[in-house]
Amino acid sequence: MKNYYETLGVTKSASHDEIKKAFRKLAAQYHPDKKTGDEAKFKEISEAYAVLGDEKKRAEYDAYGRSYSGGAGAQGQGGFGGFDFSGFQGFGGANGVEFDLNDIFEGFGFGGNGGGRRARGNDVAIDIELTFEESIFGAKRSVTLTKVNQCATCDGSGAKKGTTMETCAHCNGQGKVREARQTIMGQMVSVRECSHCAGTGKIPKERCADCHGDGVRRQAESIDIVIPAGVQNGEMIRMTGRGEAVKGGTSGDLYVKLHVGKHASITRDGETLRSTLHVKLTDALLGGTYTVATLEGDMPLDIPAGVTHGETLRIKNRGVPKGRSSDRGDFLVTVEIDMPKKLSKSAKKIIEELRAEGV
Ligand SMILES: [Zn+2]
Ligand SMILES: [Zn+2]
Image (cartoon, rainbow, N blue to C red; front, side, top):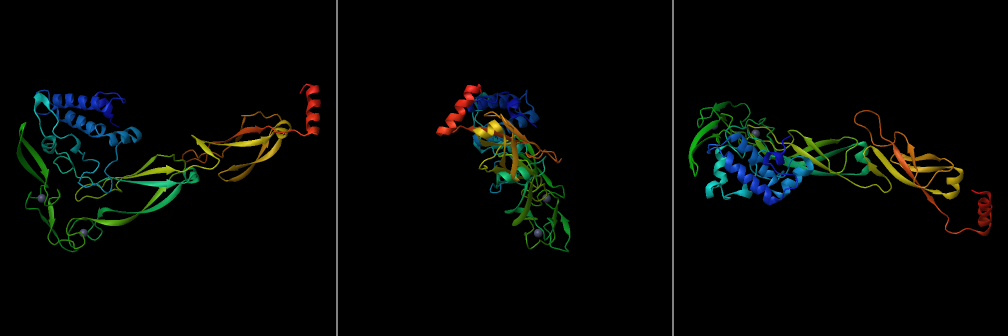
C-alpha cells in the first residue's frame, strides 16, 4: 500500500500546515509543465494530499490505511477513485501564480471521467453493530442498501431486450474523445471518455425502459454479509465490487465497519478472553470448585488450595477462535480473594490458634 506521508515527505505527526506546505513545494516542482515535471509523480503527490490535506480523510487513512469517505450518498463518478479536490482550489502556485487546480486535474483525467482510466463506481461504507459474542464466534447480517446497481433487465447494456447495439457516432466507437483546452499553463490536450456512450463505444438502438439506456439504476439490494469469527471493534470488511455500479466501468467496493458491544463480565485481549472470579478466603486456603461464566455458558473451575490474590487460572481453548482452525485462545480467570469484613468470636479464636501455629 502507498504511504502518503512518505510521498509528501512528512512525518505522521505533521501538522495540517506542514502537509500543505510540503504539497505546494512538490506540486511546484513536479508539475508536468515544468522542466523538472513528472506527471506520474505529480499525480502521486496530488493523491496523497487529497487524503492527508483533509482532516476527516486523514483520520480515516490513519485508522484504516485508506480513506473511505464518499459513500452511498456521494455523487460523481469515480467515487473513491476520483478524488475530491474541492478543498484546495486556487492555492498560490509556483511563481506566485494563482491557478485553478481543477483545470489541471481535469487535463490529466482525474475525477473518474477522464481519459486513461476506466470509470469506477462509488464505494459504499456502512456500519454494523455486533454483540460481543457475535464478534467472537462470527455472525451473518442481511442488509438492504439503496444504491446504483447494474440494471438487471438489460444486464447493464442499456439496450432494450432483443435490440442490437450500434457504434457510437460521437466517438466512432472509440469510447474516447480528444479535446484541447487552454489553461493558465498553456494548451493541454486531454482524452476524455465519450459522454454519449459512457466510454463503451456503443449505443443501444432502442433503450432499455427500466434504466432509460443508462445500464445502471438506483435500486434496493439485499446483501448478505458474513462476519468471520474473531473480529475486533473498528475492523473493516471490504466486499470487492459490491459498491455502486457505473456504466462501462467497474463497480466500487462495499466497506463494512464493525462496532462491537461490551460484555457484562468478559473482556478480550487478543486471542485471550478474561474475567475475574471472587473467591472466599477459606476456599483460597483449602481449595474449592467455582462456576465461571464463559461465552458458552457456566463452566466449573477448580480453585487450587493456596491460590493467591491476582493469580490467573486457565481454561484452555475457550478463548477467541484462531483463524480457520479449530484452535482457540484460552480463557483466563483472575482470582480476587474476598477478605472477610468482620470475624465472629469463634472465627477469631480459630485464626488466633492458626497464628500461634505460625500460619
Ligand atoms: Zn436496463
Ligand atoms: Zn461514444
